[in-house]
Every structure is written in C-alpha cells, then in structure tokens.
Length: 312
Image (tube, rainbow, N blue to C red; front, side, top):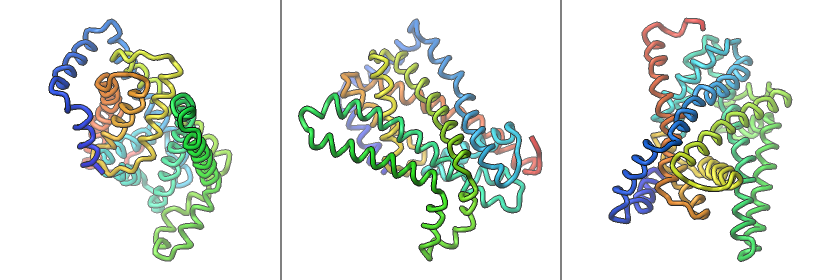
C-alpha cells in the first residue's frame, strides 16, 4: 500500500515540470504571509491534542492500574514515538504497555484498542456528515442512484460502529468464537469491563480531540491560501479524515500519504490547488506526529536508562 500511495502522490504532484518550483513559491509565500501567526496557533494545540489522548488513556488504564494524568501523558508520548515507524502505529501498544507496572499489563492491549476504536468512531461520525456535503452537492443530481447507495452505506457503517462500540462484549465473544484467535482472548477481555457511560465519555473525549485536529487543519489551510467558506473547510477536512481512517495502510511513517491524497482529491472537488492543500496536510503531520514523536524520544530513552519503576 505504501508503494501505491507514493506512486499516486508522485503522479499527482510531479507530473508538471514546474510543480516543484511552484511548491517552493507557496512555502515562501506562507513564511512571509501576514497570517503566518496561524502556524504558531496550530502548534499551540499540539499539547491539547495529545492531552485529550492522555485523558482517554488515564480513563482506560484505570481498569488495569491507577495512574495520574501526567503518567498517562508520558505513556501516550512513549507509544507515539514507538508507533511512529510501525505499520498502523502498532508500536503504540508496546509503548503504553511498557509504562505499566501491573502484572496484568498485557490486558492493556484491549484497553488501547477500545481507545483507538473510539477515535475511529468519532472520525466516522463526523466524516460521514462531511461526505454527505460532497454527495449531495456534487453527485446527487447526476448520479442519484449512486448517491443514495453511498448515503445508505454511510448510515449502515455508522450504526455498525456504534453497535460495536456499545457492545464490546460482542467483540470479545466474536474473538472467542474463532479457535485460532482464542489465545488472544486474555489480552482483550478487559474490553467487557467498560460501561456504556464510560464509552460515552471516551467518545466525547475522542470528539474533543477530533475538534482539535479539525481546527488545526483549517488554520493551516487558511495560512496556505486555501480560500473557502467555513462549511466547506469543515466538510473538506472531516471528509479527508474519514477517507484517511477507512483506507487500509501499512505505512511505516504514520500513514503519511493517505491523508494527503484524500485531501487533494476532496479539496480539488472544491476547486482548490493541490499544492496548497498538500502543504497544509504535510504541516499538520509535522505538528501532530513528527514533532511530538521527537519529544517522546526523550521519554523512551529515559525509560531505558531509569527503568519503568518510576511514578509520575
């Protein structure tokens, strides 16, 4: 998948001979723009973004062992750094488990999965609304049958995700029903211990984190002179996040490329230049993944030097 993504990005961006030169001009214009303060504002949201994730992890991890918010934040940063170079951020599981002291810490795998599933649910719920804007505004009149099919598909997907989210026991039972998967049952059995109220709180925290992503992306789009209405910004960004989340990826660099292709396609439908959109999307990745991963490296090295017996 990563090779296909890189190839499509290459075909999309570098087919015109002057594209690379144009990109340089776009980046230079952004650094000299009177709106360049927007980049700083977007950067200030970085700790808020991962703060929401730490809050979720603190709530999730309490089923295994009690932890402070600061310790949960550190665990998230360690997981982010280790997940940076692994397919689908699988290193995130190992990083958070390493930070736990309980003998039952492997049960945290199920807790981490619940947290990621809640974030997926938030992305699908919000992203479906964004995609409805494109379906109704651009395809419905010409292709009503296809449009209706897509709407029904989105409704079915949302219902299925919410049903699974509030019936974690069903997911555990599904794993138990398949003999080859039963050996993993003890790692996910903790999923049954979360109440509907806790799931709702986790979903709200996921929506809060999603809102931070949304605001950051819009600020960066404005910085790179992508000019749209507020509704178009919101629908374009939410649709981009939806496509990025549902398209399978085995990228070793945190899904870099999938979001960029999705953003260029959807904002292209809105008549925007692909290089401005690409610049905003790459800046979002730089702020929320690359920079925090570099910071998290400090905690990873500290973990190796001092061991994991420290308390926050």
